[in-house]
Length: 208
Image (cartoon, rainbow, N blue to C red):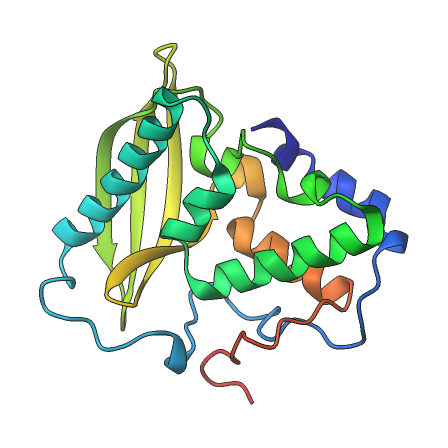
């Protein structure tokens, strides 16, 4: 929870330490709601409902709480299970770059405390309400209100795409923690600033 909050300051500190080529991650300057054609298929009718979006978000937090009951919440594993391939590819490219330059990627990507899942609260994390909105194409947004272990309240907005037959999270967006554009924008900006390329990320719609 704590480390992602310092991301901007940390990025400044490691600016001169990371150099991984001259190409930037494709789509780094695009709006985070854009989706590459090749990343998604037409949404099956049974998935294109607010109920399906809500069910996937609840499944993700059931998994988080199950991990917690069994000893540790592994944020990387949660991302692997529930985030889009674009998100994961960008995360992996940044992780590789930082590890090669510094021997550790935790300074940027955080650790098992992972604010991007916890919304600043401790486990168990109970979902109080989910408001899902179906957007254009195969995209949706979920606004989730939580109650944490100490009865504190929290909020997180997520952007989701349909990929490989399920809703997957593309972006975690909470202005208090991530600023405008959410966590994906932080990764995109960092990749662009440091020449980090991820060739598996296709160009967003409307770009070459």
